[in-house]
Image 1 (cartoon, rainbow, N blue to C red):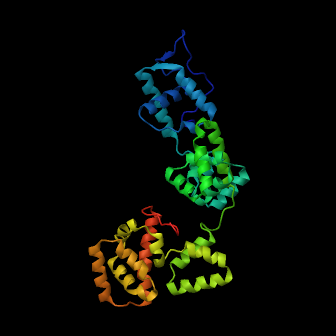
Image 2: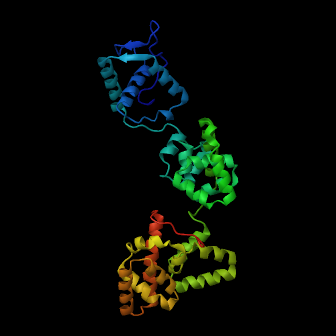
Image 3: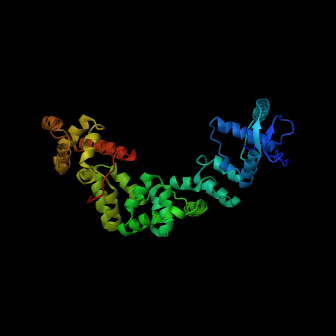
Length: 357
């Protein structure tokens, strides 16, 4: 707004005779007053103007200018609007005018490493709403804050997150810690907006100051994803080798892996019908036909027991007629089933259970 209709040092219309002045001519109006008229006109039309992004001083000037006027006649309004439109048309391009603004405009367009280096060199903090930046962070970044910060800070952060993400994080915390934070949420009614903003700025700066990782996921997740897409023979060999080298790491990788064998313990029975709608019938027949040779009958029975009886009987008949496929064909069919489940998990259509749930 300040770029299009900059405020001047000239005073806005003042009260006259103990009341607010009425504007009957655009002549002599300060640019501050004209800006107030334009803003009021846009707000009347339902425009969403981010006035909160203006410096506090300019917000105050705009409010005072608007408060000093009462009525504007139609001719004056049209004159001010025409002048405003003319100024906009003369603008060829609007650039940020500062390193902070340039970095905000290019956020996501340049590499995170370059952005972090430029911010550090220029001493620029990230702009915008710190809570929005926090809401955009993943659970892996947010969870340590809930675990390590005071319960009061954790309660404020939990209250500012989306409900689904807050629920997910709460479920990952130990019971006593989760209960303490939940109770602290009930005590946040007296927290001022200024305090919430300071907490957001502090947390965002703290989490954004962490070194930029070369990989999006940790080593356990990366190895697990690779082995998920490997054949069963390769997967078993790699896990056996990992157990010889580092049993703890191998155990963590086993937990990160989701294979056909994990279906009975990681998939909720109610989700089976929805999964089957995303899987080709041919893949089901091949996977079910080859499962006994791989010792995976329990996964087949779990799926059959949680689908309609008619469809289960039909699949059993097709499996009997199909015979035993090659191991590579079975692996491919099982991989397609697992991929369908993983895709549904990624889009939020289902949630995989943890072991023991």
